[in-house]
Image 1 (tube, helix red, strand yellow):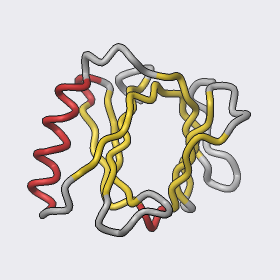
Image 2: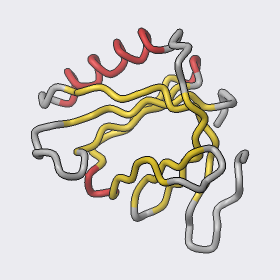
Image 3: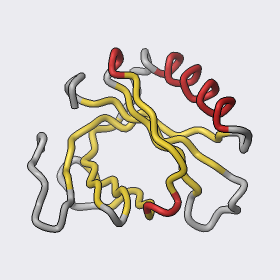
Image 4: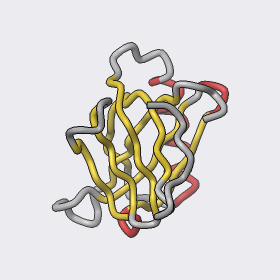
Length: 118
């Protein structure tokens, strides 16, 4: 799966490598961004990743296994609090409240794009 054009319902599909997730402190946005970019720098050399397919829509973000058969993660858009990217390392990430967790628990989910411009 590559970079598929948006479907009629507005869903955009992208292939990526799932690097992992980590807990984010519930603090001010500036401090969160510093924490995220520090972690992303450390994770850029991470050799453990998993090929996945991401589907973005106005409803949220869904992560499937590479063949799009198994849903691995889903986050409603209302649960996503911020996203960031490091184009130089082809990384992107989003912070969200995981379903079933307390609102104080934030997790950053990190991905590496297959292409820097993606």
